[in-house]
Amino acid sequence: MSRFEQAVRLLGAGLLALVLLLPQIGSVSAHAVPERAYPEMNTAVPVMPALIEVWFSEEVKSEGTKLEVLKLDGTKVDMGNTTLDLQDPNRSLVTVGVHPGLDNGAYVVQWTSVSAIDGDSVSGSYQFIVDPTASPQALPQVATQQAPVQLPVIDDNDDSNSTGRNPLLYGAVAVVTGLALIGLIVFWFFRRPSRGKRWSDRPVDRL
Image 1 (cartoon, rainbow, N blue to C red):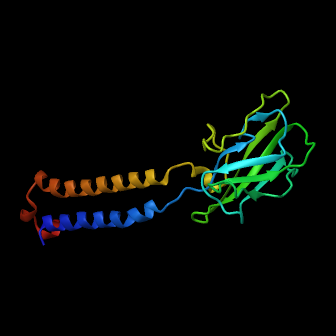
Image 2 (image 1 turned 135 degrees about the vertical axis):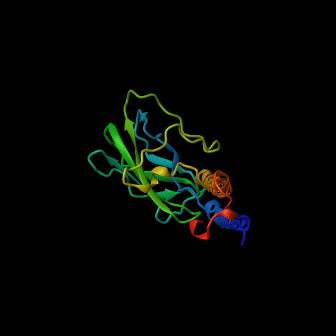
Image 3 (image 1 turned 30 degrees about the horizontal axis):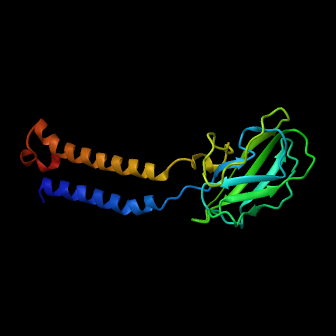
């Protein structure tokens, strides 16, 4: 078999591997993470609302999806009635009630979501502050589905730190990198003989 035929087979095998990998890359889905919330994430509101609302980035399941509201000392202040809003056409709005008469200060919303698309579960948290001097905030508009400027703060030991990244982008980069690597191998394969004797003139044991 000639060197040219070997190089062609090597290139073909590499391309076939990349083609087989593409469907797996395309099937990767981002986790369901909070896109927006009320009160807004990492902001201040003048009064504590009776209901905490979180809109996730994709449809979630009611089973396993949970919101908890706590003070910084760990005291739980929600009513434990996490509810998936079935009136939401995207099935991405999740709410939980909080007890009345809560003090001003910082609160933590701990969330766990179960994606209705791939069943993946992911958890994280964010904060908001109740401060009477804060400017009132309007409720997020459901129709716009706008994400907040600042994404929620995810726990350091949680693997959801990268959920905001587009997996398709990484797949495309992997494909381009693979093609470039194969091209370099083929280039080196044919370029190397020009530095000395031709491959056909070299002893077999030196190949």
